[in-house]
Length: 186
Image 1: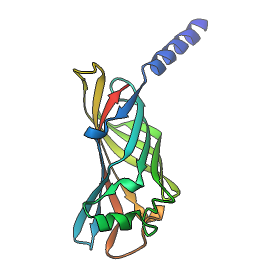
Image 2: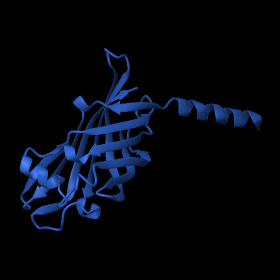
Image 3: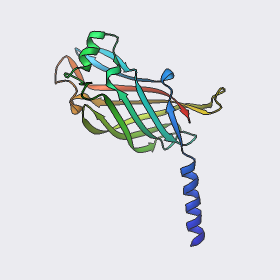
Image 4: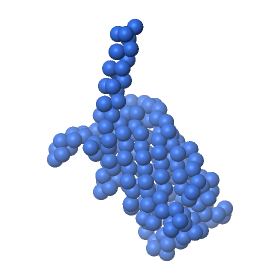
């Protein structure tokens, strides 16, 4: 019995120690979105300021993400629209300066794919969302000699469920997220 407990404790320690911290490389990552406009076209945008940290093993499995996105950094290539999106009509960036996400579940779905469930807080409302993830690859960076992982996360968020903008026929309710990440092991 003591050998079994020791073996379990040893394996648990190995699994925990195999986890490391990864940080997003802002120059090679993008938090993007798109939404239907006038029911006929897609408007795309992104957030330029974000901090994404993950804890994962060397194969980037069992990832646990913490995300902080600055709402003032929204960019849709139209300054007037961006100012409106920062206003109280949408994100109310002065009152709600961040969109946050914290992982609550991770499920491996394939060799390089996974589902990531977490609590998304936006506009003062927290809801559970699920994102589809894919590990595009992992390499050893020649300069730092540390691992880097390329990831893609996608999903859909109902903006009305978070109180972002009103119910209007000119704007779709669903926002498509596409997050491309280059994560560097710390």
